[in-house]
Amino acid sequence: MKIAWAVVLGILAFRLWPVAKHWLEHGPKGSAEDWRGLLLPIAAVVGFVLLLIWMVRG
Amino acid sequence: MNAFDRVLTTGQDTALASHKVVRNTYALLSMTLLFSALMAGVGMAIGMPRGMSMIASLGAIGLIWLVLPRTENSAAGIAVVFGITGLLGLGLGPLLTQYLAIPGGGKLVATALGGTGAIFLGLSAYALTTRRDFSFMGGFLFAGMIVVLLAMIGNMFLAIPALHLTISAVMVMLMSAMILFDTSRIVNGGETNYIRATVSLYLDLYNLFVSLLQLLTAFAGGDD
Image (cartoon, rainbow over all chains, first blue to last red):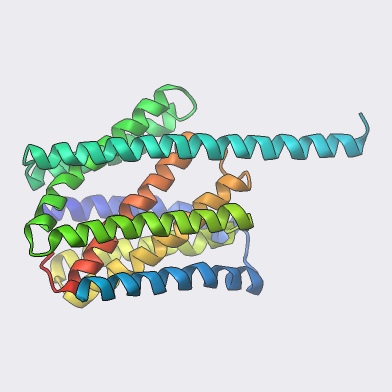
C-alpha cells in the first residue's frame, strides 16, 4: 500500500512539474509590495494555528 | 457607441462574469462540502477499511485527471464534481474513525474542522474584499507543492516524526496561500470555469483540514 501511494504521489509531482514550470516562466512576477500584501493574511493564519495548538494542548 | 463606452461596457461585462463565477463556485462548493461530509459519515458508519479509503481516493484522482478535463464545460461536470468530492469524503471516513478512537480525538477533529472553516472564511473574505491579485504566487506555490510531495514520498519510507510535522505545517501554509491564489483568480477573471474553481477550492480545503488535523494531533501528543 505504501509503495502504491508513493507511486501516486510521484505521478502527481510529475504532472505538477509542467504546471510549475509554466507559472515560473510565464506567470506574473510579484513586486515587493505584492509579497508584503501576502504577509498579513499568512501571519494571521500562523497566529491562528498557534492558538489552535495552544487550545488542544491545554 | 464610442470607444470609451465600449471600454466601460466591457469592464462591466467582465465584472458581472466574475461575479457569476464567484456565486456559482460558492454555491457548488457548499453543496459538495455537505455531500462530502455525508459520504465521510457513511464511510465511518459502514466501518470502511483503510484499503478501501485508498481506492476511493485513487478513484477521485482518476476523475480529476481523466474525466474532469473532458466534462468541465458541460452539465456533466457538476456530476463529476460530486463524484470527486463524494469519493474523497468517503476516503476520509476511515481516517476520521482512526482519529476519533484516540483520547480527545473528538476535540481534535472538531478543532481542525472549525479551524479549517475559519481560515477559509477569513482568507476568502480578504481576497474578495481587497480584490488583490495573488497570481504572482503561482510558480512559488506549484514548486512548493512538488517539494512537499517529494518530501512526503521520502518520509513514507524514512518515517521521521519531525519531517512529518514539518510537512503538515508547510501544507497548512501552502493551502492557505492556495486559497488566496484560487480566490483571487476567480475574482480577477483568471478562472472563468466555476466547476474547475470549485474543485480547486475543495482540494485546498480538504488538504488544509487533513494537514491541520495531523498538526494538532502531533502537538496534542496523540498518535497519528
